[in-house]
Length: 165
Figure 1 (cartoon, one colour):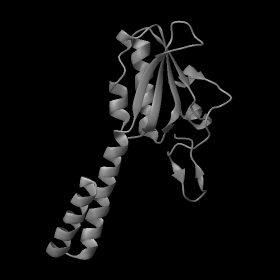
Figure 2 (tube, one colour; figure 1 turned 30 degrees about the vertical axis):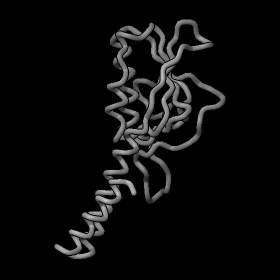
Figure 3 (spheres, helix red, strand yellow; figure 1 turned 180 degrees about the vertical axis):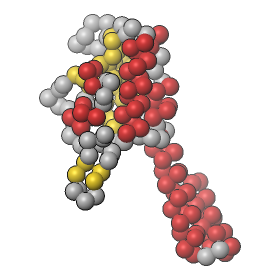
Figure 4 (cartoon, helix red, strand yellow; figure 1 turned 45 degrees about the horizontal axis):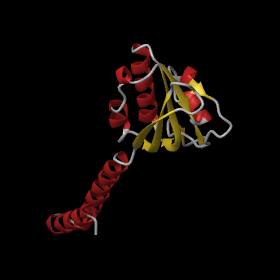
């Protein structure tokens, strides 16, 4: 049994004895959500390789979900001063989940722009293309771009995704 599950069981049991079952359930759900977010944030992986199609370019292959829990560590992993003039972020094995992830991509793009380096973004959805304001011009359109929605401004009454503004 994972230690986190054991912790939740013990915590829910203690809260049930001290308070009541309803409070214990709420505490258990909240702690489980925090543990899930922590675990998912640690699953994002970034692997660097030389590009086979663009001479001198460095490709960072991103794997795992990019969301509010992993956004800060994502931004901190990039150091433009150590990279060549052309860098490609490939999101083929990743999923941009929320607005925090979009902001993290924008922040990385700003770091490379400040360093005078050229950053390209590959395998992002059309939804990401529309929602990225500053980094949108960095997109590489591909025939095999994924198709999913980014969670921002969901209109419950209409049942559609908003524009993010």
